[in-house]
Image (tube, rainbow, N blue to C red):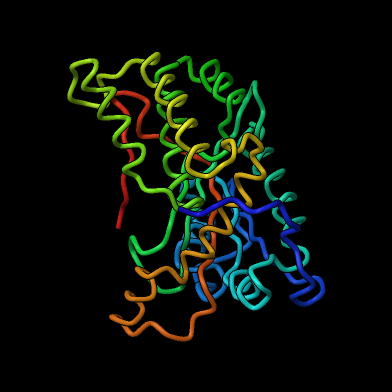
Length: 277
């Protein structure tokens, strides 16, 4: 378990003046391309290339591998300029998607994913449905007209954030889920209704507070900052380090971070997501 520390500034003076740390992609145009894997990581470079080709990729932004490198060189603090650039590009993402980050009425949710220059599948961390809180979930219900989906997305987000960002074990939440299904005499997660999932969110938050000593964060930018830091940190997690050794991956600056508008696979029985190679 990781304990929460007091909030500190995420910026430092590292990095060249005017250095670009964030590259945007969306609406058929991207600031990067496939030749920029060393800077944008494989995922970020390919998302940019697909955007430029006119493939309907959900819009987003990529934080560079140089940012990760500077993060480690400067006592795990962001280089000066990264925070401001991130906020500017979130605004661009809002305009592109026609939704607002943290907005109760028209919420924008994002995924936060790692992406090194060399493919390292499953080795680093991901957070989905980021931007949800106790008010935004109500907006998601109105926007989608699907209460069950909204509460399911929220409970999934709490689990991933707790695990990836705060280091809590999945088992803390799986036990609660299994107990709920046993109570209701059902076998599948999809058999849980909106009220059941809402109660799971309540229980998950209680467990989060018990294990971390703090409330689950409501501020979407706090959620985002902590998640970016967690992805940077996953560059040196035991899985990633071992994978690099096994496949002789050397000389990389770190991982890039892609922040992308969410698409959902849990909207119902006709909804699904997957990975294409």
